[in-house]
Length: 183
Image (tube, rainbow, N blue to C red; front, side):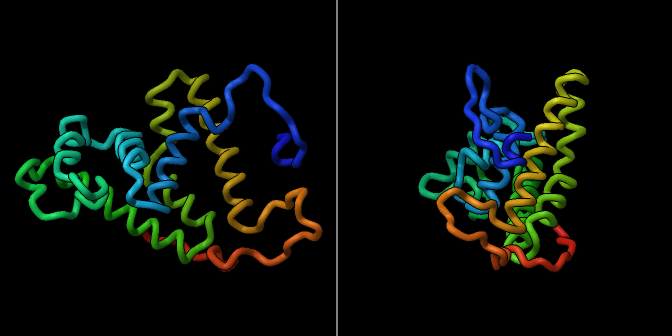
């Protein structure tokens, strides 16, 4: 609430909002969309929620990715020599989805890309399956607050104390016309 009202504050003795696991998980997706070479983001995003990619698959992928990112290694020839088709399929499906989502984020409003991402990963269901109801509800509220903040940031910049006058035009990366991404 303080952030929404642009009231400065200092946390004392509590966990930072951005240090919460549910926020870090979503940030991993966003980092990967912006930079597919982000290996820590790749690992966190592909494993949360679980999608059939385990440690053995990731270790074999890492061995294949000697001088390239994990994301790039998924599309390199020769990966099939280390992994079965059953292991390769979810990796490629995930990476192709990230590519489509990245394209969507580049051309469509931030809200469209975020909504499509959240619909595809079923994060709310994941939270309610993985945590007790009270924890899941708290985590989901944090997610909704984070998404609301991102959507506001994606449509117009928040004024900062350093600016002498407000910016009234939206950034060109997020056009104001709404279209639905098909990712």
